[in-house]
Length: 372
Image 1 (spheres, rainbow, N blue to C red):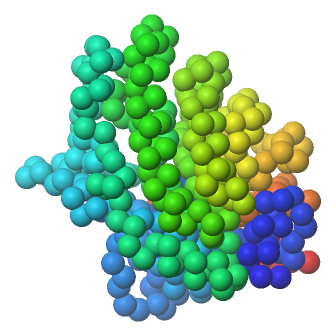
Image 2 (cartoon, rainbow, N blue to C red):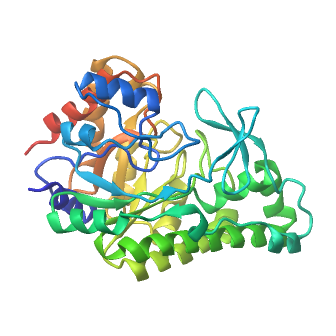
């Protein structure tokens, strides 16, 4: 069974010869230092150029994927060298105008450009990022077509940006946007609509290049904390998921053969039916230590409706011993793999505190316990 066949059968809830493996997708990527340690542990020499700047996950190295028998390959556009704009104090501005800085565990926010917004009309003059100014599409179509014609791997279009909820919070400030959804509904709708317009523009430009060739289209938006949803299901449905459906509808129009992947962290079990209803086919990262996210329960309730992607705990198991990793992987295989519907990867980013040997153990154990 080829990698492509393996992944597509799993997404369609069919049995496979072993569990499909992924590494490097939306929020299942490796932080830079973790990547460098893994590269060295595999004996791979020679540097590659980072595919983006202003991030702690900057590398996509197919030499690593080949060495680890990963079943998915990604196509993506590079962001223009104009962004991020780096300032003298070390902070930098994204294409959205959000002021940020590097932190120990990721990028931190310094200023939200619309935090003082009062009149929705002001959104009409904001410099919204346009695909033609921000994305470098050179060679993207050729790479996607080559991978498609070779037919070896499942091809995934990497998300070019985060989601409507996250970006609205980053532009406005999380506290402000959360309050807006309850007391300034016109403003909240207007902002979310502008963010959706940007998403439609960017995804449209990407899919005009690679739409016929991809098997998966990645999107992302975090709605959960460790213990609950960030906002009520009703709020998410009204302001966010109704717009996510419009994005998903456009994706299906341009790439009808592709499955839609959503990265959404935390305790989100309550809205999985809503996600399915708006067109999500693959759910990542399946954060099983969050409240109400037991993998056995998820498989029983939703296993016929959605494909799970991720699942291997990065909060404890992947930071522990190799035996801890082995037990965790065995649990995920037992809980989620039967009757297809599961692609195994880490449950969120592999951060710098996760040893390279534990990444290798995760993939070794997955193949060992799932082989048929």
